[in-house]
Length: 436
View 1 (cartoon, rainbow, N blue to C red):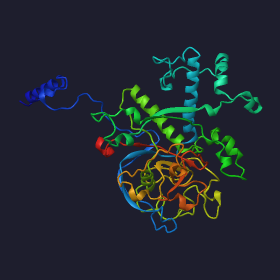
View 2 (view 1 turned 90 degrees about the horizontal axis):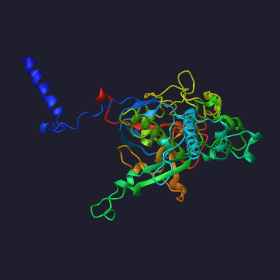
View 3 (view 1 turned 45 degrees about the vertical axis):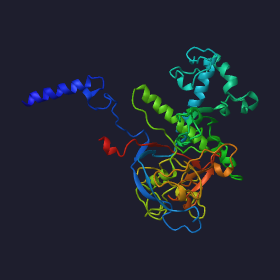
View 4 (view 1 turned 135 degrees about the horizontal axis):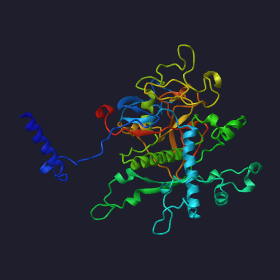
């Protein structure tokens, strides 16, 4: 009898599956969907959802106007366990360099580099390049074609050495302004209320090579030549945090990283990931606290030394004894212990860009759920509107600036030798336990 029931139920399931999604009249949803099993992106750690008290952990009288406190709730997300390193960012600059070379060689008709054209004869996005074709940099014909387009002209070369012209490392991408699209207006659209989405699309085009001279122009009358000449280029600094990258370049890197990952996932027919992006201020601070809500520093208590007297971050301790914590300037990432979530260098080493525009009174009007004040400043906007929040303090900052709740800013189009960044990715769902 039991076997008959099993056979009968199996027949029903087979029948429902064969009905082209009709479910034999029943509501069964779309069948044969890809199963989603979230895995931690490489180099990232999972930050669970939660609420916390955002702001200073103690009374801050001198900075009371920018040091308000507020209870904020944050959804789950992934975050890079360290700041983006020189070698990781170099993957971005190398991709842009190689894509330019592929396009130039394709236009010249070199076999293997031909890029598909649209109906108007325009070459398509470099993302459509055949990356399996290697660039023969030392081939005489290739060298001659790329000489004028990609290398410094002879009168700019030092000791006649052939070098890439990094001023030509231009990355181009599109942005959809979801916030603008979400604003309802009776005056927009046709009689049905429909609007042309192209009005919310914009194209960003910018040079993405770091400002390697930042070590020199940030500090006058200070010998920083070795870092200026070698920091981004030499293998000795591969695992050091990238600096000299402004907010716009960090945002472009996030866009490129998203394209790279999702292009691969589509190729293997897997669901894509949400966008890599800069963290909001609330996400950054929540992650930095590592589950310790009322602690001023990522490691807990109110002190910058451990029980053995060793400093717990790379900053400017004592009366300016830069080397007392083990590093003169930036140091290798993950040189200190992680916080409760497994994140390294949330205090010190380099300060980090967030996605948020900086406003002293943002706590007063921002939502308490995934607090986010975003504004894309235009070139002709006032400088005040170009301020972007940075968090965590750096190797050149005193202890106050490496606290979890300290807020400060830099301008979105400026690059500094003490500001880097890391990415986050939204977690799709409530918690990892839901998928186990």
